Every structure is written in structure tokens, then in C-alpha cells.
Image (cartoon, rainbow, N blue to C red; front, side, top):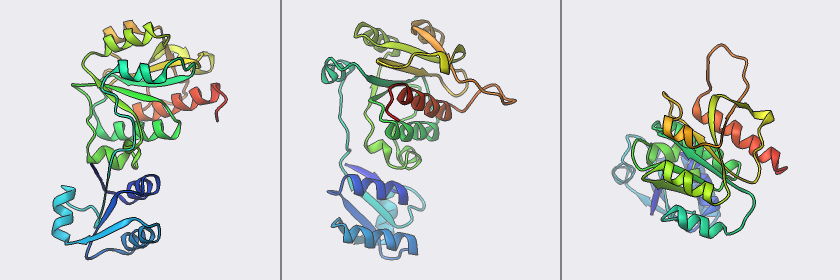
Length: 242
């Protein structure tokens, strides 16, 4: 059971998964009261609880008086093998691999783009990676409830398994092939490096190639979540699905 707070995240969650419960504090501001009224009209189960109970359940100082509790709306893959079995012989599959992305705001923003551009899976490390928490839920605007994620012990082993199953793996790197010249259709996995150091050396060596986003600014790189969103758009554009 997942507990979601944040007005936009709650609205997204109960629209896409209406079988949860909206918990509302006794005192609500105008925006929260309107969301509560909309939920009632939509047939969502609503429970009024004390302000103290809302704060206890949310675990944050101010959740604006609303929480939504629902089951996670996504596939729960226990291993990469299970995911590969589920996709079978599909020719178009899109995966993003996060190599030590540790900022939960970046992680949440990436998940939001993954949802919007309909990527199939996000792979992260068990260690040295942001975890799904309340900050991620809010930053992703609720997308954390719909995106398929998988945490693995060894990214390089996962990359080998993907390549053995027909995936081309590309690392996002400033020294790579510029995006307009890159071929990003078919079975594709894109590796995004950490906020400070980029791709780790061994992971970079595992990639079939490197890709970069051409820019013309004065600083040397884009924020990882912004770069991920641009790459996802280009993948969708090349498959004529935008």
C-alpha cells in the first residue's frame, strides 16, 4: 500500500486508480477542499481524520491535509529475467538505466518523464541510488505509482543480460554521437550517469556506444533529469510515436 501526498500527485493517483482511500483532515484550505469534493463526486472512498493523524501518517510537516492510499499500479518484476520473459519477442522496448543517480528530486523528475514518454522500465542500483520515498512521489507528480522499476545488485551484469537479449545499450556522455545522428529504435537501453561524475568507468565500457545532446550554452552539461527527458522524447520521435 502506497501513501501519496501533494495535490497533483493525489489527483493523478485517484483518477488512474480509483479504488484507494482519500484521507482528509478536519481543516482544509480551499484547494484541498475542492480536491476532496471532486473525489467524492468521482466515487472515491473518503475518510475524515484528525489533523494529528494526517501528520502522523504522512511523516512530513505539512501534507496540506490530504493523503491518498492505494496499491502501486505497475508490474512488480523480481528480476530482469522476469521482465525479459514478460516482453517476449517485442521489437520495440525502451529501458533507462540510472548509474548512481542519488538525488530524489532528479529521480522523481526522471520517473515523471518515463511515465509521459511511456518507457518500459527503469533500472537502478541497489546501493548508491535514490530510493522511492515521499520526495520522489511528489517530484514525480504521482508517476512513481505507474512506472516499472527494478533495482539490481550489479548494473554491468544487467547490461550484459540485456545485450544477450538483443538490446543496444547507449551511455549518455558529452563525448558521444550527437542525438540527431543516433539510431534509437528497436530494443534500446540508455544509461544515465550520476549527477557529479557521470557514467562509471566499467559501465561506460559496457555500452555499445555513447550519445550526447547538442547544446549551445555556457555550462558543460544538462541536469540529468532534463537530459533524460530529452533523450526519451527523441526515442519516441524516432519510432514515430509522438
